[in-house]
Length: 91
Image 1 (cartoon, rainbow, N blue to C red):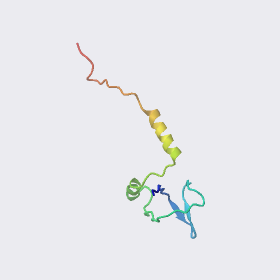
Image 2: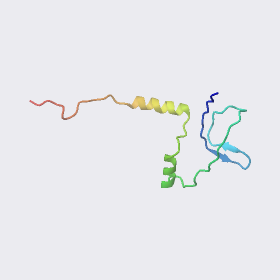
Image 3: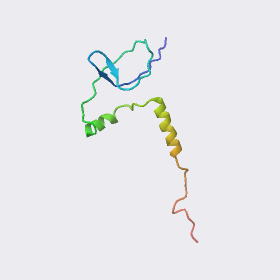
Image 4: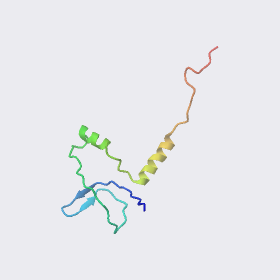
């Protein structure tokens, strides 16, 4: 028997009783989930340590944000021009 496990990483804040997600999440209501709790480092925002930490975390993007980013990348691409300053023929 094969099981298909998917993994979602999310940030949450503990309010003293429950974990409250920092961003909207797409989870099935009523379903039981296994949760691994890991505290985020307490680095000042913009500090070198915070930047290094952010570089090693997966991006926190929703699917529609990824689609919009890919659309903007495609829209911003310039046509390839193989001619260069050294390709001109001289007589």
